[in-house]
Amino acid sequence: MTPADLSATVLHAVRRAVDEHVLRAPVPARVRVERTRPGGRGDYASAVALQLAGPAALTAREVAEILRDRVAGEPGIGRVEITGPGFLNFTLDATADVHGALVARVRAQGLRYGHGDARAGEPVRLRHAREVRAAVTAHAVGALVRSQGALVHVACDEAPDPDWVRLGISYEAGAPSAKEIAEAAGIRPVPAGATAGELLGRFGPDATRWGLLRPAGHDRAPLGDGLLVQGEDNPLFLVRYAHARTHALTRGAALLGFTSAPGEETAETSAAETSAPETSAAETPGAEALALLALLADHPAVLAAAAHHRAPDRLARHLEAVAQAFFDFHDAASPLPVGDEKPSAAHRTRLALAEATGTVLAGGLSLLGIDAPPYL
Figure 1 (tube, rainbow, N blue to C red):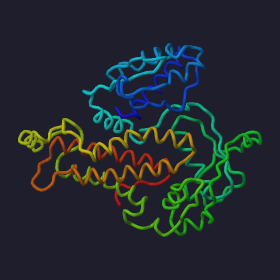
Figure 2 (spheres, rainbow, N blue to C red):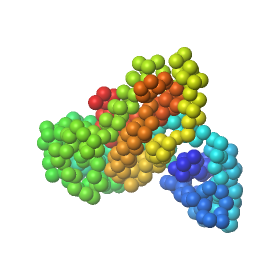
Figure 3 (tube, rainbow, N blue to C red):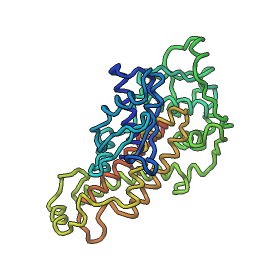
Figure 4 (cartoon, rainbow, N blue to C red):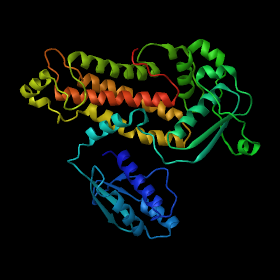
């Protein structure tokens, strides 16, 4: 279990306690967990009970006991203790297959992996000027906030530019009232300095959206020819190429007669595992695989933070990091047999991680409104 996983688990426990009316306090956007300091107990600690005690009109220790009862026994957690005035201390279960569970969770949730319900049912209104970067940013922010369960309405201060449709931008039917517009959160990035038509004619929709969303909103968007370079120095190409490569690995595995699903061995893979036990399903992940797994585990927290700060650039940078980590992993431990190797359980495990990576990349690009082609 990663710190992001643990934070999400504790946050879920807070939400359950509030929903059950055992705890009467606002649910925080995030729960902070930290490595236990020298001399402390467990692997991680959190002061969330102290944070919630005042609003809940309870002592911090009472809040901690409520949360302990709802966190104890969760997958990956071995023990939960309360220390001091109400600190929660967590000892992780060293025997849990946290890496396999993470990959399985990504595969099960698909493109919705990382979506949450922290803002379920919350109405959010966004407004922006009649400017292309503001329009693209507002709609990307809207998608991110929706991924956290909110009900989002995006409006433009004036009549939208017809060219925005080619960027995948549309608006809900019905004009908001003057009061609703006045209460809406304004999205005001540094203007692009060009119209949608000009940018589309030069870069096309996907590169235009990436070029407008990748820089932080307070920075100028450097819209240069590098957006069209078919090379790894272009971050957009790197992300989309990594996604396409994960699909190529799945196709290659199918040609060799195996998939990433456990228990689907062919006669060849079974024979290979018998003759090569060192490449079993229990293969210890290398440093590159662990780095990639950590980034995949952080994806839900990245989406939540990008939504909270209305910052699509955070997601774009995260996808770049995932893509680079994927290629490091791919080069260090090929998901496909090399040379005289036969497909083995280790190859299935690596292929599953590659496919989970592709899912995260596709889901992230989708939230940014960018296509993720399986071939590139």
